[in-house]
Image 1 (cartoon, protein in one colour):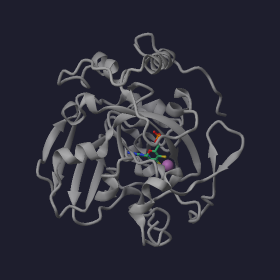
Image 2 (tube, rainbow, N blue to C red):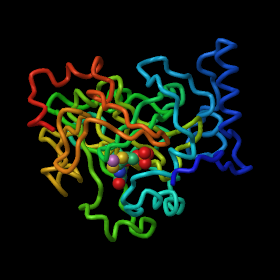
Image 3 (cartoon, rainbow, N blue to C red):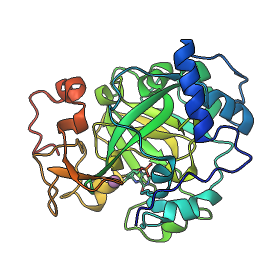
Image 4 (cartoon, protein in one colour):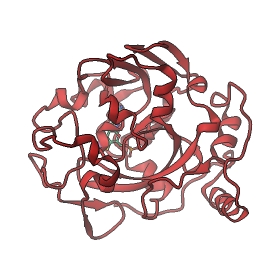
Length: 316
Ligand SMILES: Nc1nc2c(c(=O)[nH]1)N[C@H]1C(S)=C(S)[C@@H](COP(=O)(O)O)O[C@H]1N2
Ligand SMILES: [Mo]
């Protein structure tokens, strides 16, 4: 079923994977880090400017997965994005029709600088980096994905939550005319997620706007999505239109739909089974043998202190 092919690359695309790879190789051998490129304020709104910026970001050496990244084809054809349907192939088939430019993110709640931010004012080119993270879905499959984006903490520091804020809630776009899955899917739309503020400020928490040096494909959550690599995939909310800072723990779409199966924390934990299946192992997409699931998806050294003293069976 998962047939490996070369990624299909439109001739209009400036940075196919192979070019990207060789450029990365070049940058490494040339010892070049960040390459300063077009930084006009409309950079993400303009296809060419965005491609030029995204193809040349610095590669983070900071806490990345050691495995080889999955292919562009795997990452962009086997997706969960219920707004477009519940089949793994639905997002690739239907998300192309989603309009992602222009895009604004509303920041509100307990924050000093609430506003409707144009995406390009939210994501500064010089802060971009590539982070290759292991990704673990609660359905017990995993991939390794080279994201491009900025640390979530950078954005949070800029909008300045006030002293009372303890959580941040994220909301996905809800646009029935472009999202056929909103008619079903069993979730109470719009899709929402949340993090405790200290989790959100953790240096591993990331806002992705790109993948493999290109703009995020719609099926992966364009134009901006969350990546929290120590948590199950459903925490990684796509196509974010709102960030709200709160004192109370926000509700989350999956917890509302099935509180017994999906908790607020959703940390990857091989010792706490899902009520309907084990979390001890995972199927690595494209590989024959299962691998053992690691505590906090392999990021325990970095994130375990966030949960010190908590009963992780209770706070699942
Ligand atoms: N808005 C929204 N975000 C979402 C989902 C969704 O259905 N809607 N699915 C989640 C789940 S279950 C997973 S596993 C990941 C999948 O991300 P990927 O398709 O980029 O691998 O997105 C998460 N974010
Ligand atoms: Mo998932």
